[in-house]
Length: 108
Image (cartoon, rainbow, N blue to C red; front, top):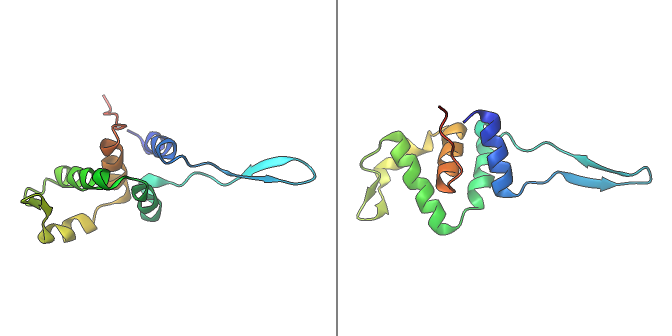
């Protein structure tokens, strides 16, 4: 997916809406959706909307993407994987997020 496709899909999944202001002239909206594929803070906010079981799936998706075979042991997140996962880019997190919620579209 392109960054713009990812951004749009995450915006929809998170229910982001621009702020609407009303004044004597009329009504207008303000703000742009976050740039999820390029902003770690925005991705942190997106990940926060996941249910607890989805967060586990998200972590598993990251491990698969990074090819970290030791990521989980006995069903629990293995501590040696923390450094590997901590360096994941916003784009990688966005992809894992979209895979977690079933919205990832592979490019031809």
